[in-house]
Image (cartoon, rainbow, N blue to C red; front, side, top):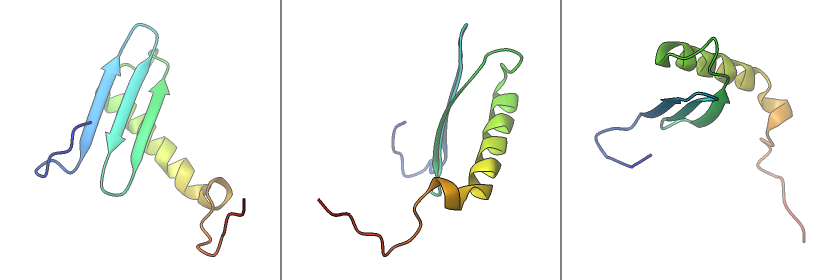
Length: 75
């Protein structure tokens, strides 16, 4: 995913025989996902699946990520 000043949102999509790959980068997030190629094998349906995944991640945010800025790591 190349950086270009005039293209803040980038999408890479590949529908292969065994996988359906979506790489989606915006200013707010980066999403890298692999889906089954069947029955989903269109960019529209893959982005729809990506949006559903993002909705789930946002709902589960506190259990998936450490959001406390006071967290320190000790070695």
